[in-house]
Amino acid sequence: MESFALWRDRRGRLSALRIIALALLLFPLAKAVADAGVIAHGARPLNDLIHRAGFWTLVLLGVTLAITPFRRIGRYGNLIDVRRMLGVGTFCYAAAHLALYIADQSYDLGKVVHEITHRVYLIIGFIAWLGLAALAATSTDTMMRKLGGLRWRRLHQAIYVISLLALIHYFQQTKADVTVPIFVAGLFGWLIAYRGLAWWQDRNELSTLSLLGLAIVVAALTFAGEAIGIAIEFGISPLRVLATAFDFDIGIRPGWEVLAAGLAVAALDFVRARWNRRVPRPRPVAAE
Ligand code: HEM
Image 1 (cartoon, protein in one colour):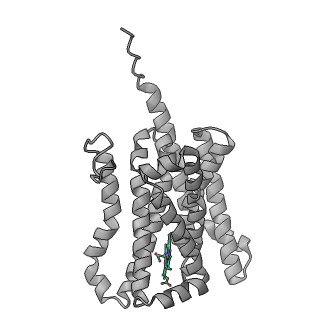
Image 2 (cartoon, protein in one colour):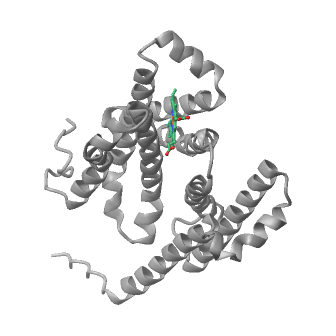
């Protein structure tokens, strides 16, 4: 029997980790309530809410994807206990995003279907939505048992394709400054490249040196991606765009922020590896 007391762990004990995860999941909702006055007096309140729900779906998707690397790098295996809650929470925000979109179309389902089938960014968003729905629906203990470990894991690997589609949808609907989407894409790139590297090295944990290399490569790709995107959009040489990377007067490029995040993770790994060496392992209890 699955418990609905989300703040308790499987043994029924109050869990600080679960309470923090719940607080994170409720934060966007609380923020929207706190901003209700501003939203209501804005030009398009429903559109504002659509953007908030979409943005938080993406953020929570990233947080869910970050659980696996961070439980390894932070040597904090218990993090796995909140992964399912965060994943299902992500889908709840995606569901709210779609529901708000339908409300914005005055509940005209014919128009909604027409729009979704005629606008590329909505087709892509909807496929990502269906993917998330399938993952949420198969997240119960019963469904895990029915599917079996291997099939369940294979199905849930769809999260990488879903993330990619969600990012494309985000980019396509961004009209002006793409600095934030590029930063977000860089972070997702790191999360996916981490798994790729671990798979390639056939290891569960990456060394600090590998994490350092990962940070540099992903940041370089973020710089390159931004330069190519801007070059295509404005018809200029990508090298000219790259040359502005050190011009901090026009702002800090997302590549630097991605590099800072990657280096912080490598530093965390370094500290945790030393820390673990100093803490003596518990002695095995002698057989009586
Ligand atoms: C997993 C699925 C999805 C994710 C992760 C997602 C994410 C996002 C994000 C991040 C934004 C931009 C938020 C911002 O500006 O800060 C956005 C905007 C938007 N999304 Fe989605 N979305 C998804 C699915 C959908 C679906 C299924 C629809 C509707 C059929 C939809 C309709 C829209 C609309 C209308 C906008 C605003 C566009 C505008 O104002 O021009 N999205 N979405």
